[in-house]
Image (tube, rainbow, N blue to C red; front, side, top):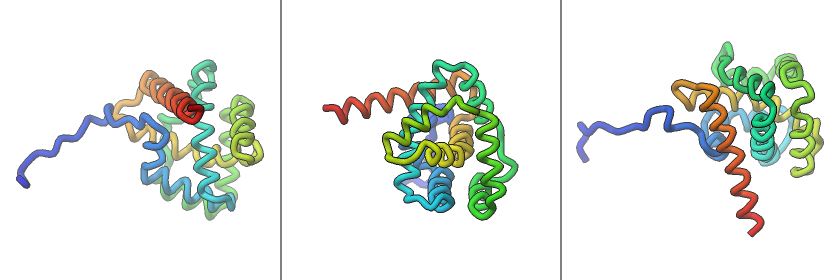
Length: 178
């Protein structure tokens, strides 16, 4: 093997997290899933399931609700004041920070995502409140991971990401139905 060979890497725009599975493989997202499960005393599989069900439903709602889209996109552009892994460690250790995160979620999205949480709870056998709280806790990691996956995030690239998640969900539904 030639050690002087230049290794080709795709530009960051081409490394977008086109699937929810790819999103969950990100080390920061993985840590957020683990710590969120611990925070809420839930199996990691339940927390992962909430994310897997909620994201395509969220994407579908954002496609038809411009205000929801704007709020989600703006949150993706915002950065946390500390590294994401530290944020989740602190949130796991500090109930006041966790409550603040829940309050920010409610203030930002209000009732726009109630149907998402109801459907997620129905599909997974959890309550809509549990689905809401877990999703609210995971959303900062989702935003952080999406922002890092694209060198120059724009509203168009964000919209494409949401469409990819919708299409992935539809494709999975079709393969299960077969």
